[in-house]
Amino acid sequence: MDRAMSDGAPPRLDFTTLPEAKHRGDESHGDSSASESEYQHALEVVFDADNAHRRRSSLVTTEDPNLGGRSESAERRENTACFVHHLLEKQRRSRKSNTNSLQNINEDTKADKAIVTKNEPATQSRMLTKRQLADMAYGVRELSKRLGSVRLRLKVKTVFLLTKAHDESLIGYTRDMVEWLLSKERDTPYIVYVEDTLEHNHKFDAKSIISADISREGRLKYWSNELCAQHPLTFDFAVTLGGDGTLLYASWLFQRIVPPVLSFSLGSLGFLTKFDYSGFRETLTSAFKDGVTVSLRLRFEGTVMRSQTKGQHRDLVEELIGEEAENDYTHKPDGSYEILNDIVVDRGPNPTMSSIEIFGDDEHFTTVQADGVCVATPTGSTAYNLAAGGSLCHPENPVILVTAICAHTLNFRPIILPDTVVLRVGVPYDARTSSWASFDGRERIELCPGDYVTISASRYPFANVMQQGRRNEDWVSSISEKLNWNSRQKQKSFQEWSNDHDSKS
Image 1 (cartoon, helix red, strand yellow):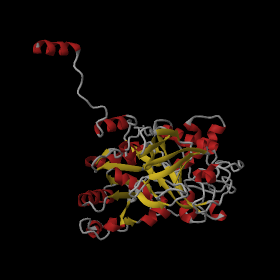
Image 2 (spheres, helix red, strand yellow):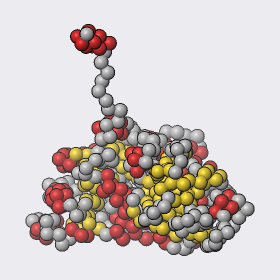
Image 3 (cartoon, one colour):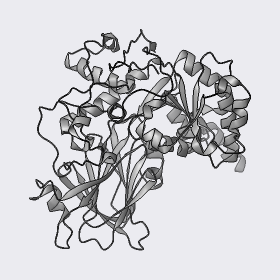
Image 4 (cartoon, helix red, strand yellow):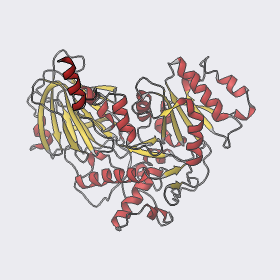
């Protein structure tokens, strides 16, 4: 992907007419030269700072860099390198001027200074007003629809490869793809990053890959979790080899900026992985030369909020929506995560069921006695949500799915909420036991009585590469083929039924 970053200016985005769009700029040379501050903030969508109203109870900021809280000087940057959120900002400005055509993005970026001005600090989505959250969610959905009808030509120089390193069969596939990408037959001298655990793997045999061709020297590199978290703009394009779990791991690695991800199906189910590995040469050649179609998948931002006022006589409802709701110091953030599938709050290792309070915006929805609660994205509707009895949901629906896990009542039914709602799922102070929160099945964290998790639509969507021209058919065919949705023997016609009945008589 081209990025004009050497002079501190935002990248120039130049779109041709439909159905193809081309992204141009200065050449990238593998490791991006952007500063660490730019890496941390490049994907943020920031709204007007003149609206002082914010949601109550979840407003405590933090200086912990893992939570997104930063010093004032670090928050005020002047440029970005993310093409997706650059388009989001231009689209927001375009809507304000009553222009609705994608061609309006052709305006010269000299007049389009930066996504964030000097006076606009970064804000997590849980702290946005209702209007701001709605604008952000609408902008992501609208851009996703437009991107579904264009083909983005990305100038790819650096390729990120992710595979299940503990699967010996996949290591061989990874080696084949690396050798093909590094071959001198490619028009572009790609730089390929593989997981650092493969550097000394005997089956991968990195030394023999390099020694086979002197031109490969310095072009095979290794990524770590820290590199993905701190310098995500190092990678122009991501490729996964595995199943849906591998794709979810890619989302977990890129907690903020997500390069376009193309997934080859080498797992057991392959609900999210759309491409056949046997044709990877043709697939990647077409993607790099002719462009890709990108679908923006909604992600959630989940923040753990720790109670600072422990005590049996405290009331979580009062602290969040009652008389104490204006007190910003009852809770403190303790970790923030971007998830693609679901956030689950359950009883964990406790032998008894959990007691869980659910809040939506400034309302107390209900108290749940159950093994847990699953809050899923539309993408995650076919995962734990479905197993718990939740609804199937098309990934383009702007919703949040809430499903109880083994509720201790017969009348708790799954509910579907708009993605403009900020949910808070917490453990009451008088609960018998603590609960546990997990984020996409990872990072299990204990929630003690009084703690809660804030869940809201994220400003960091997951850029998933789709097969050309199969945006809706892929999802319908997936639930039909993978889940046998509504599969049954066809009913006989009346004539066939009559003949069978007469013959038996």
